[in-house]
Amino acid sequence: MASLSKLMSIAAEPRAWAPLRHGVAATMDHKHALDRFAFRSVVDVGANKGQFAAFAMAMWPDAKLHCFEPLPGPRAKLTAVTAGRAKIFDCALGVEDGAADMHIASRDDSSSLLPLGEKQKSLFNMTESGALRVAVRRLDACVPAAALTQPSLLKIDVQGFELQVLNGATDTLPAIDVIYAELSLVELYKGQALANEVIALLEACGFMLAGVFNQSLGEGGEAVQADFLFTRRA
Image 1: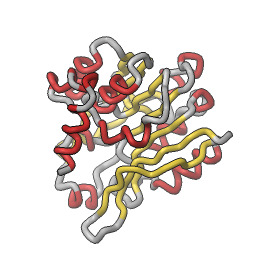
Image 2: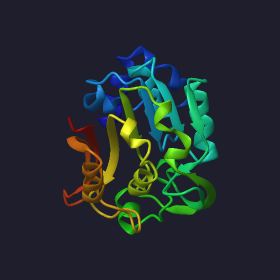
Image 3: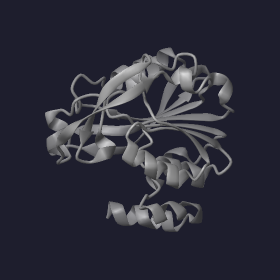
């Protein structure tokens, strides 16, 4: 039913059709969280094959996109989907510039700079197949505040590495108006920060929690993860 609903949402938005030629479906399930905004800059961290980028291009066709994807296979799809409309960075983001091992999951959009935990493997029926050394940079070094036109969105989907991404964005964050991040309520990746830690950091940086969307539940009905929307405090 969820897949049918997603396809119906894409069918209703002609600007989301083109990515389907590359086997990529725009994540129109984020529309109810973000359609109130008119962004001119979008920073897509954890862009994978371009699912969110396709959504962003459909919603805000004049926005400038900055997309980050360290894995070569998904990045090739991302490049095809964005068709020159995005600046694409072939690195992961973290606290400092360097390199790290990306833990490859059987579903590539669940790969992470953190090892997959047992709960992630069991709840989502996946395995860790190996590791790939990737470049890691600070967001500050890649997208300085001056490169962003407001209103601006920072989307983060990095499988437990959210706190490190934000700690590497101290100079860029003042130019961000809205943050939309997938956060975990239980440990899915080894050593990850949980939602309450990320919320505390962003509150200290001048953001407030404005909504929680697309919640995933575990086998016993426990809340596992969700998309958290933050807006800058007035």
